[in-house]
Image (cartoon, rainbow, N blue to C red; front, side, top):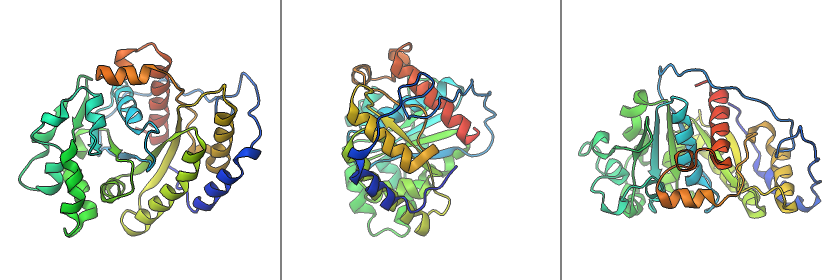
Length: 307
């Protein structure tokens, strides 16, 4: 995996010069990113050896598709035989709700693992989802108190890592849905993660916000987790009909190059409908373009990670 060092200033510059971006070439052999399409075949069978790859799905800007991407990437990875754990690290509990979990009624959540170590086991919190081979550590509004409760704890940035340690040999991928902020909960996710995937709405202000997030990733790498890598950026809510979307895409690819996934998630009403139904789009509308997009992203993630 590639590390992106010192990209903050380049991101800011790209955002400032967005309106000078050339239009993407109209070529059938070119994908939405403006690069030639690269075919990635069916992934090999999983071998289920070694510890899980922990991936933080992170962006401090809200409404960019983090939760949607976490649910559907996880479900697509599970379709390919990977054992997946989703961790809801957002007090709003959107990930849990998006999987049909009545999170407000739960007695045990991620909050109990963070603030009551030793009193609660992960198996008491773990929930089996409707998707085969995909489990969930749910969350609800109780988690909002965790940042205050952890502030005086020794090693508070590694609390989540300690809670997840017993689970690492039971899964191939652990995907953490981070809250839309760069507070202590998000730092906990980055401190225990092997890498970060940034879902980014194809919009001007999302491009500017990447600079702040990249700075945070670099600080966590320097001070808490030297192995933390930027695995890539997945562009969401893309609409090829809009000049603005194409311009933003061009700038993101200019700054990050191959860190931008070839897979692009386009806008569709299928995603909110699937969320209301409480299941991934891969099962709610398995033949839809959105489902195929997340399967393509899962193949790309497996190919890049070698898992």
